[in-house]
Length: 313
Image (cartoon, rainbow, N blue to C red):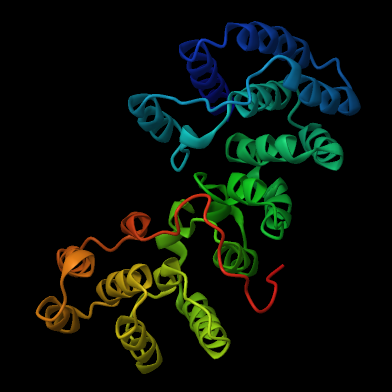
């Protein structure tokens, strides 16, 4: 696991250098060396994470597409495209602390979580995918599924394989449903397709019923939760959505038909639709209906989702 820590640190350092953040690299090199020596206490470690804001940029890390792809090769599920320079520096410090003392790492991480502000929480959650003994931090990721802070929720749940690999079924489903409630991009939850199941589909259809009863719109990504053999209930819900006038959700429903193997229904739609919906139907017929395909119908970043009738905490 030390190799993973060192490899991730190397990638992050190179990305900071490529972004022209020399001051941040110099400072984090020095602080990482101190942490690697095992000297600072847990409280000092938390303070160092806070101090990083004085030396690192809050702007996007902006790695090149090639660098982002390389990151995913190094650590499956890792996508640093939306990291900030400050998060990158803080993750470097966390990696250094992990390499210094594995036995004391859970205590240090928990101390940092205890005093973290929003930005520090994001860095801590982004770091979990690299840390040895992931089972030690699964409960903390489960807590991150409950937050209403979009930035923190996404740092914990999106662009990292940690939740899919480490959360139990209850926490996993909570993360997925919470994403739908707050409008987070479910399609960016790494490993989603490998863990979607019948129970999550049932929960999603319950949410459809609740929202329709309240006269509210359906998130296009809700249909991502349907998989396996199509039930009468699922097909009825999809047909109702396709008969409506919400284009994005209708396109999500078309993709769901592909996920459920409803080729005949898709062929019928291909002969009676046009425009963006027809394009989506054709993609579903061609087998392009995995979670990545839902990126095209996702609620745009920065858009405010319709307020749900209940909270999912």
